[in-house]
Image (cartoon, rainbow, N blue to C red):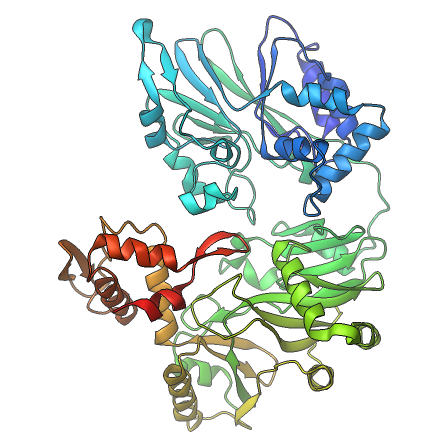
Length: 592
């Protein structure tokens, strides 16, 4: 499995086999370095020129190291930069590191114990294996990787947009697509959603996923296959250095003890911990007891002080943990003040001062989206950035902001790039909004800030028509929807049908082939209605207005034939923060 600089776990594996026993073939699935504590220790255990029975498959982190070694600096690879520094500090020259990387190969195909095995870093889809393999005399398989992008071997089989730009899809259902009746696949890289615990090593029929997050307290997994074809999984844990015991009952201690909270070093923020909850925490029986409800909570590693934080998670009408209808929204707040705000359609960023510097974060730390948002913020502030930083530090708050940018087009056209200030949140364990600070900073520094509209001083049955009327105005304006806030600070999202229809359309277009239009599945309550569009049928649920609207747009897209549809899709595709992305508002504006 992925070693990720965990030399302690690798040493246990090597000791278990009495060294690199020449009677055994050892195949590593990639990602030898990064994230863990001891890159130099891993190099020492494997050797910069490993024996012939130690085979290295290249992972995306190994490729990153190769790029850095070639003098291509990347600020978004802090873990790889740290690995290279550790290797050099331990006396490994660049020639030594290059020699080790030169031993990496993109894939390893084996025929052993009457079974075909394919080892790659991230796995390949089963239908792709059918296209690139041919059966030779004697029952051996021949692989032709000529038309398989190298990035696909490193980050896995996902939709073409993700794969081409080097991004993975982290979904346990992906493992099922790797199953092949003839070929046993062994891979690392990912095993389930990043927000969840890793799935089992036996991920799907004929699929072994050996990524088990050893660097985050999991284990280094090894698949052992003996001469008779019997398999077993061995697990080795990275020793943890003795640490100062956490003070009982503190936020950090409670978070660390909770099974559904993940605490990891914040990306790009040395000395800061990022705390998030897993998706499993959202289950009805888990959510009430989750110790961390913030979507992005950052603690100082030394004293557990909150240095930045986002909102407590809140939900949309109709979702679990939220009212089912607008009437239920009002009923949940009877007797309380009830206000609404327009919901902007961008991505959330957190603006805070950490270590004396103005930072923009996403929920994991400083990533590509955070750096882009920071550029927008500094462009807006200009020479006032220093004054803004001082005031934000004195207030000790985090600004929750919506980032609007053409580099990350969403479903609603919100106009030019800008930073929209939503709220000032005190840097405390529990969520405390500080509207006076928000309003003062927004006014002084010229930020857009959605107005808070009070619908009722004490919600009652007369509040429902007011809420319905306000939502109707959002519908007419083509907005995403509203955020409803109760007097006790609880919130709920209400989305417009306009937004829902665009969301349904985006889902249909995600893997859209104009020559083979998708079929919209029927909804509950009746069979589908069929419309013939350009020679293809699209089924529309009569009870789903969002699906019906989406199918109507598909009809317009295909009205001039599949070639014209493909051209329109290409013209509306832009280079986004996460690779090529469809700008849906641009596409809709171009439709006949």
